[in-house]
Image (cartoon, rainbow, N blue to C red; front, side, top):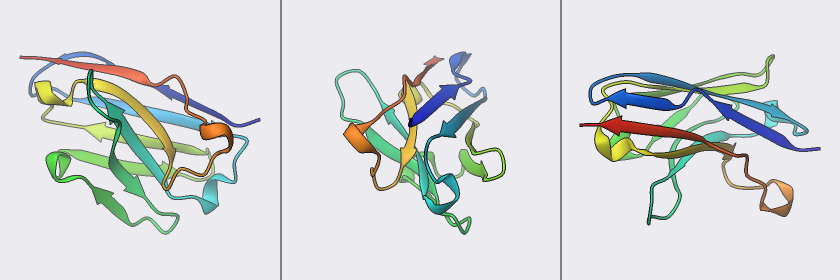
Length: 117
């Protein structure tokens, strides 16, 4: 069955770095554009970065120059390197396809990122 398992979150001071990882199973990973989404308290979930099967990357303006998305099709993983973190990056981070195509509107458990000022 479909499974997305996110890891790597934590508590970090502003200006610090974290690297998130997502392991996927039950999907044809190599054919999908993969994305990292985040949801802050009281806000809607947003797509912050995506990477196509050809390696083209896109970022929301607020993270450009600070976050880097990558993928490893052999390992079926997608990663997000987050540098120069800001308190406004605090959120639960999820990986998923872009657009959202998994059955039953599937989401993993996410990983919490907290940036202190």
